[in-house]
Image 1 (cartoon, rainbow, N blue to C red):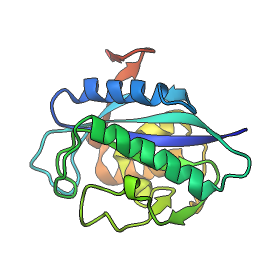
Image 2: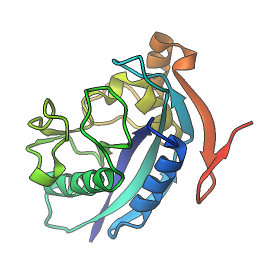
Image 3: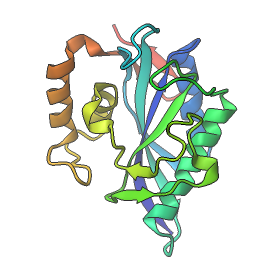
Image 4: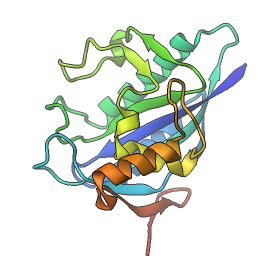
Amino acid sequence: MARVRAYVGLGANVGDAAATLADAVRALAATPGLRLRGISRLYATAPVGVLDQPEFRNAVAALDMVVAPDASPEASASELLVVLKDIERAFGRRQRERWGPREVDLDLLVFGRHAISVERPDAGRSANPAKAALPLTVPHAEARHRLFVLAPLADLAPRLVPPGWDETVAGAADRQRAAEGEGAARAVATWSGDGWRPLG
């Protein structure tokens, strides 16, 4: 069996978002075939698109996924996507407007060194009708231009150049921070092994 390093973005802004993300991290760690390899700092981030809503809490998890030697990257990434959507549903993710509030949002950002665009399995489709027909695209199509993704991803893999990018994650984070402003993503806690520990 082989392993693939995957990076998963986590976000929430409904209820106790930090506690929800901590529970989501534990759910990922408890999933057979996944090994938790790292958790970024927790960030308070400004909403994008729909501004009249609470701040988000965002983080990124690094996972090693066990994959069969004969499994295609597309099949393995789709399998992980279904895991993420199952966790979202278990946490009460509701259908809402694009960029609106989220009980919990889990996005597959990077899957090894693979560039993937494949039809989503039924169990991996978005609850948002506008996005349900979109393919699974990895690296995540919007990650490169979203500080709420880049800041925590840079905590874990600053020198990573995802497939199709012409810059490192750290370089992209610096570029986007200059565009969005320092206050758009603020580190507020670190992962202590079983939960978040506030900074400062």
